[in-house]
Length: 130
Image (cartoon, rainbow, N blue to C red):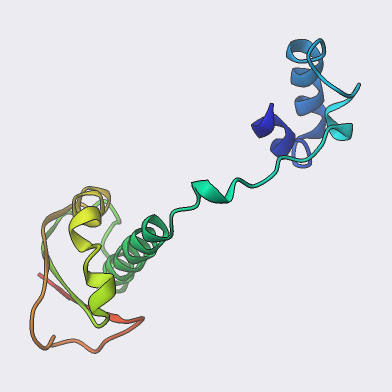
């Protein structure tokens, strides 16, 4: 019912119908809109996963920007992308996300670059795309 409670403000009639049909017997209140709002479980928040996700978002954004600037469809395959990351701490997450990013953006070879990139850093990262 927690997900249903969170959906209720956006689809109130549907949420109420589902609530009445399926959860009325075990509910504390007569309406889903009177139920207590779900509470956050801080133990479930993973800062490292958040950082890895943010790095993936930045790389995907950079590749999408390249494809758009070169009038390529977003599902166009790219032969290779070399990613240069300014922050050493952030670069530790590259191995965790590289496969997902490559599949999402249709990149045959996605590698972490070493040394100085030919492109300028933007958002803490530079991309060399073939």
